[in-house]
Length: 175
Image (cartoon, rainbow, N blue to C red; front, side):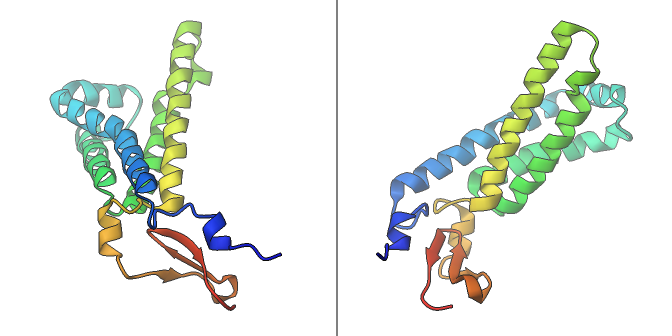
C-alpha cells in the first residue's frame, strides 16, 4: 500500500498561504523581544553597561554595542527572514549565554529572587526552542530568504531522495 508521501507529510509552505503567514507571524513574535530589548538598550547604555559589569562581563563599554547589534539587527533580520537560519542560530547562542550569565537561578540564595530568575531562565529556554525551529525549517515562504532562493533547491545526499529548500521538504524519485 503506497502512500503519497509528499501529500500526506506536507509541512512546507508550498502552495499553502496559511502556513506561510503563520510562519511569518511566528518569526515576528519571536523577534519582538529582541528588537524591543535592542531599542531599550539604546536608551539605557550606562545602565546596561553597569549591569554587564556587575555580572563580570569583560569590556562592557564595547560589548554593549555588540548586544545592541545582535538584538536589534538580528531581530530585524529575523522578522524579514534574511539569513534567518544563521540569525536564529546566533540568537540561540546569545540567548543561552544570557540565561546562564544573568539568570542562573540555582546560584541565588534569596527564594523570591531565585523564582524570578528561574522564570526568566525558562523563558529564555522557550525562546531558544523557537530559534531551533527556524534553524531546522527555515524562514518560510514570506521571507527574503525564500525570495533569494526561489528556483534554487539544495539537494541532500542522493541516497535519501529528499530535496530541501526554503519552501520545505519533498520526496523525489529514485535513489
